[in-house]
Length: 214
Image (cartoon, rainbow, N blue to C red; front, side):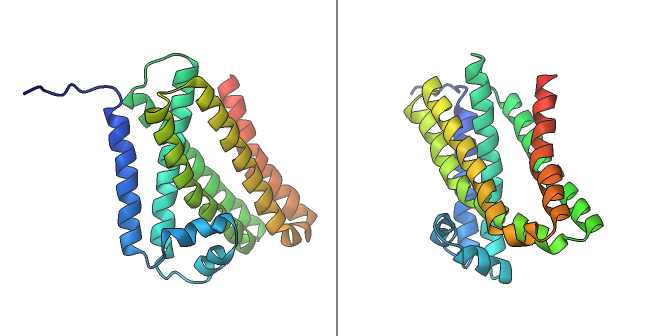
């Protein structure tokens, strides 16, 4: 008998398999199919349906958003470590996951606070709901990308750069789609439109960029 040695990627394998298990469990308890969620790539039916009813959609959405956060954190961490030719370690990933989670939650609650103070909670709820759907459906793409980067390309720098460019482009496009979808309500008040763009879209990322550049 030969004992299997533990390598540095074992925790990554456990993390990705855990994400698959979370999706499977969420699908088991949800009345919606994963295909219903992924249909949001092409049409708004699931977005409207899940906003008007809580018939099991929240389980699938929340679980998928959690998988999105984990895989986005893992991707960012792998890009950083590969770029700097450093060893991939669990502690670094946990720190990255904590930072990304805090950033997303802080952005959400600050948005709710501003919306409450300026009296546009309904508009923000509609935008946040659609944003949550997009994050949920992107979770599956990120999961596949991470699997390919780790096991098919073995952390290839070119593939990582191409994936980073594609993900950044997709995230930019979905923000434009959000603004376009709710353009009538946003443009109905110049104050709401400027406040939304400055405080909830541009400011968090500018502060994040400034933090890393210090």
